[in-house]
Length: 422
Image (tube, rainbow, N blue to C red; front, side, top):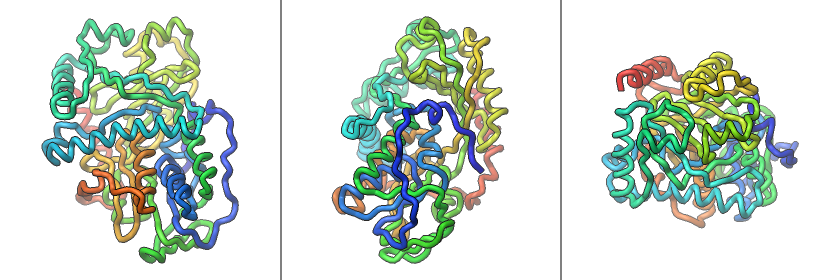
């Protein structure tokens, strides 16, 4: 079922993405999914001389790549302390460095391909939703400095008022390396770059089955069959049950966003003076920023299951007004949702299974990582780069799960209870 369009697609600069019309009978590489990962992989492999086709069941960027909050963040959804304990210092440091390289890669790509997507290195502020959460942010700051040599700034209850015009938070942690962009404009620009490199982009082609094996795959699609030497799965939260091995490891989780009418410059200067991106420390978190045209964009896990945009918009507006009472009379002009891909360990994963290459599971931290991993996976398959450190991390299956997330209502209730008790 199609999802309602949001602010980003409505306000992205108008550019023509050259989409092909005819499904080829054979390609070297078939990439399933036309978002950041698939397009970045297609660009890399086409630049390397491969005949590449991107198969998108809807339209290019119609999934999370054109629907997210546009926040370009270092790190992962997974807590860095847990990553350190589980995987050891050397691996944890390598993974964190890859997250920083992902941001640098996005900046280089935007400059190299001259993508008009309002890219800015604005910094990100994580806000302590309760006084007890500030001590957690202090521990996070110390861990990042001690183990990763990465400097952030802890803001107390008074200092945080210089960053946000709200009395709703007890402090915050400022990360200077984070950025922001217009996600639909970025995915359009990336699509044009992939086409310029020689990749074929096809829309309204749903892959129904993947048969065969390395060197001799056959993809059954809604528009016929295509043979491919290699297959790349770049579907993230929109995977469904296409490849059962991956389906048992990826959970689709809904995330929702509202956007107001454009706000007056003086009001914007009071609410978020330095035009940063922000999020809070709830498990069912909220995240917010200004759009390029001056709207408050406010998102969160208003519900765990995809869909239910109207109900989620009501909850998000209520939360937005709690944070910013000055917006109580402001009209919500857009409301939309999308689907994230979550993993059991809250880390993204990249690798191969029975010859099928994949990169997915970004857990809401995918703008930079999905783009970089797509490019890196393309380089790996060309033989031009080694696998990233993430490829060595085991990809755990989720017990009693085969692609239908029956447990999401229980997970939502559990995390809501944790928030109330924290």
